[in-house]
Length: 377
Image (cartoon, rainbow, N blue to C red; front, side, top):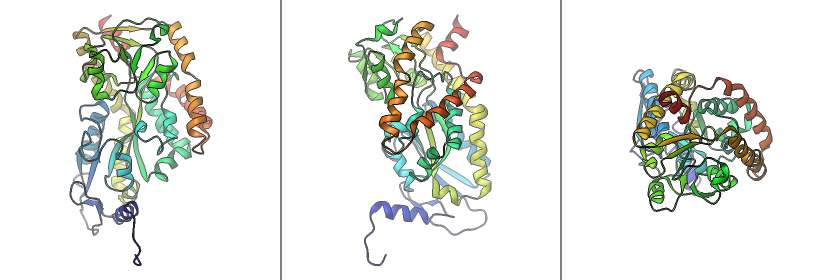
């Protein structure tokens, strides 16, 4: 380039751009390489994820990727890399942006400076009591609020394929808790805004990494766990150390986004784009509820058999908890995250509330306590 040096990111972006119309891969960690157009070509893509394949969002993604490949009728092959086997935690969004990976699952807490506006979808006690409501709120907001779409496409060079989430996160506690006041001073594991929620409820939010939660409970470092996906908690056997599983009215848990490199997306033929889009519609319309209902019930049965006790706070206690968290939590995000980033967070929150009101009455995915009541009471 006229004898001038090129930095690494510019090199990667320019090389990825050369893949428009190509998208065939080199070695496992190779970037996109251009390939000549020809009839009957096969597109090969990498899906690169930080979580285990057994996690609920990973199982949904696995179904999506397999279904897209099947519907593509031989035009598409997808290589899957689970549990940070290709890129490390916190590197996946950059990898997709720069063309090192083609697709990934993105959880916002690992990229606070890259997706500040998307973090406005992370909250508790907002009346979003069904996880499939959060799914549709996220989908519609992406279309209705242009700055959110710009955050992914213009800021991070990513095409959003679909939104998903980590279903529900009841409070796991070593001892029974019937009132919000009983949380005072307890050390509760929390992820991101989950830790802040525990602080607002009077407890001490502890940002312990997921792999160390069981041992922390066992050693008495933690008194309980919040902001931890119910299904994943069962896989981690947290109920052995914290057998009191309490529905506190916090609502749906942890939105995530599955993305594709935008340059690659633009290069795809229309028929292949249609396959990706139709399969995403199936997630929103039925597959998410079908899969998560099955996984939630399976995990609940295992916990009940293992001696877990399921309870729910009274309506009055849930109202107290709600008032302690909202609207202070979302207003804090609007003032301290959205505003410094140049966004009007209150406009986004206004849309969020309207969408929750629209979709919550038709929410279908039961939370663990409701499943317990319908099956065991």
